[in-house]
Image (cartoon, rainbow over the protein chains, first blue to last red):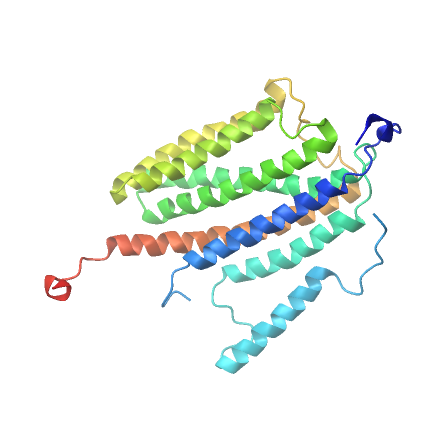
Length: 46
Length: 260
């Protein structure tokens, strides 16, 4: 992003950061869910 | 980004319907009540999953462009709920730690362990999404800004408590030290919260529904409630792991004839 692309005063573009943030949230939510599943007590708990 | 045509059904509703059908079919095959779930917290997990699918879809495609920040403001629908939930979870860590020190009940120690771990996961998500927001808006991923530094210190403090907990062998000592450490680490929460008021910070000050446009507040709230439901599920699941480990610790040793 260069200064001339933000001449209107509004930040232009940035979808790569948006997608990265949403993807990261899913990676963390799914990753932590998986870690809980692997560590869950077995036998008589469920 | 081209506009996306309205979906015939929201993503959360679609996943929710499929999950409900799967639950009913599985329960009927097992001869159980159709709506029964093995654990109460799974209801929170399912509602949280459906809500976050809707919330993130709205955040990505339906929420309006922000007047100054343009499209990148959509990152706030992930970043801000994770900030709120991090503080809420660490606040509960503090309350459970105080409750343990006053009552000595093991359940509070297990909840301290669970909330610290979940809080650290949320804090890492908070900081990573914050960095992804900072790059297009501030021009850099990281700055030695009071809010950023205090959040990092808060996260590292609670990681330190978890590390301390893993190093202590004696169960009673471990529980006491964890609670004392958690209370000490909780002081960093106040510093983090007030950092934007106490020092000059690039980070914005606390917002309220009065200072944010209504369509943005709505999507923020949906995502916040979604993460709240998922956080309840995370804490409950992590607490069950802590409780199972405590039972293993307290189990009487096997008789020698069994070991021989």
